[in-house]
Image (cartoon, rainbow, N blue to C red; front, top):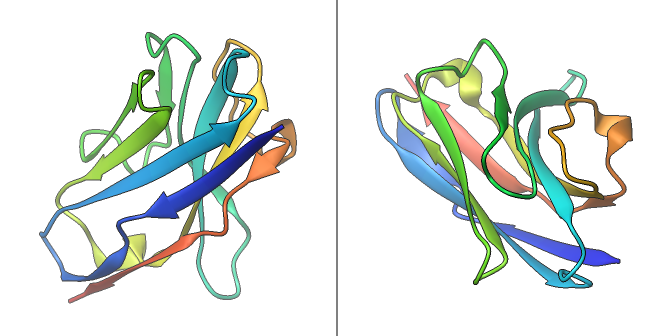
Length: 124
């Protein structure tokens, strides 16, 4: 199995940037896809972005296209989420998730392993 630890959240102002990291450990030699999800209070967990094992394929939610960028460093077993032009509506707990497989997956129940989450708060 894979263990995931997110970091990089914080309190920023609208228009600022943050970079989240998702460090994986455990059985990382097998191919696994990674997704980022977020959940605001009182709302369902929603897909933000996913990346394939190779890093070649990605998928973004419409709400973050053009502002967020996902990437992965295989040597470090780390996936990054660069978030630019942050908006107050981006405020949420952000979770990374992993699934053994090669593709991009966009639904929470596609994923088997989850990190503990990191809070992102964007003030107006």
